[in-house]
Length: 171
Image (cartoon, rainbow, N blue to C red; front, side, top):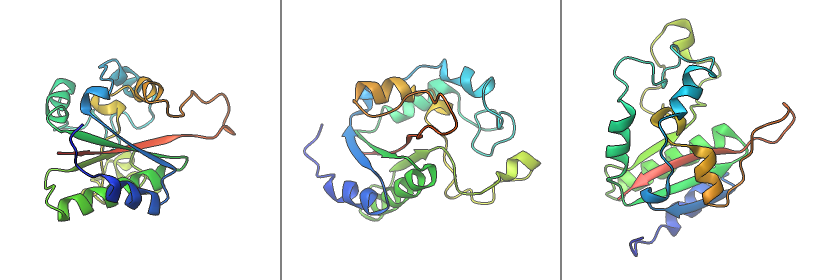
């Protein structure tokens, strides 16, 4: 990891409600194209969601990996609330951009709208902030979280605490 100070961005994510933030290199992210199978055969938004890999124009998985591996650092943001994780990552992306990291890029399961407009066949209502999830671009979030000693387990019941992850890719 470069000697760059990411503390400002870590504190910003925490101030937006993140439970935990770790900084890793792209090489520490586990890419596995099989994640797309979980999208295709396990997600009610397949073919509908505005950030879904089934949408026209979504990059192929191999292209995502090539692009993401060009970054030097990834801030992994953890929360037990999906919207908090996404809002924290967007805040970090914006601040990084204002600090000159013009290619900083946030990823998260989208939680902006209560109901995705794509489910009704409409265009995204918030395309400036909608971002793809880890698994939709070929990242195995379970293996990545395990390798980084972060909490994430399959849910056994609807009452289990969920762990959500967002990321900001930075130079």
